[in-house]
Image (cartoon, rainbow, N blue to C red; front, side):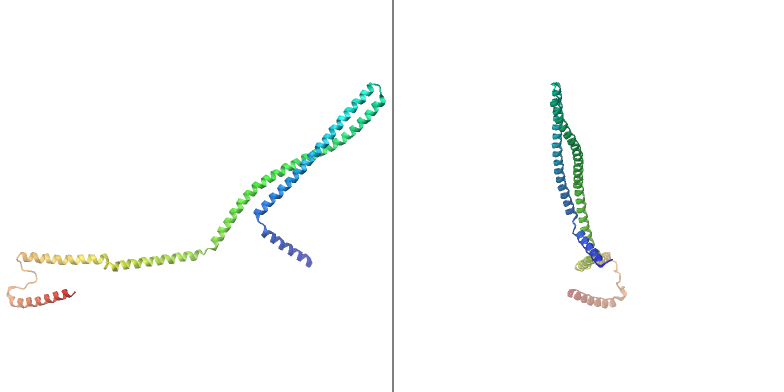
Length: 257
């Protein structure tokens, strides 16, 4: 392959690539319909011109047929009057019109065939244009849907779903941490929570029970649990004094708290 052939092929390939990239389907369809409508206008004009020519030929043919018949009648009249020379002249005129009518009839048949063919072409072109309009609207809708789908796919493709998921997980972890800190702060502010409250209630109940038991023993005259026998009264007095001292110390410590 020669150098110029290779260069020519490269140039044509690049031009075709540029044309393909520059083609907008919607604009191309619109332009195609415009071109088809222009062809339709030209074809209609051609059909109209052919029909007009056909009408003129038909009119001329009918006139020559009429003249042929008229000169035939005149020839017959001349013979009836006994004027053969005049009859011959009439027949000559009749023959001339007849030949012209025959020629016009051939032309008229040809024009009629041509007009009929052009009418069929015109009808076919009108049908194609109507079909093209319907197809253009359909393709335009499909093109719009395809562009929207392409844009959606490009948008979805550009999204970093893994990063977004990681971000949501990280934010969820932060929310959980904040909730945990809030719960801990509430427990600290409440003084230990429900567990401590129940422990206090249980401790208070034990002291109250012991006090009630002690009151019942004193009211019944019985010797309280933990008191010394009568034979040890001296030692008991000394112990009672020690207890009193300890009670005073306890009261003093309680007052300081």
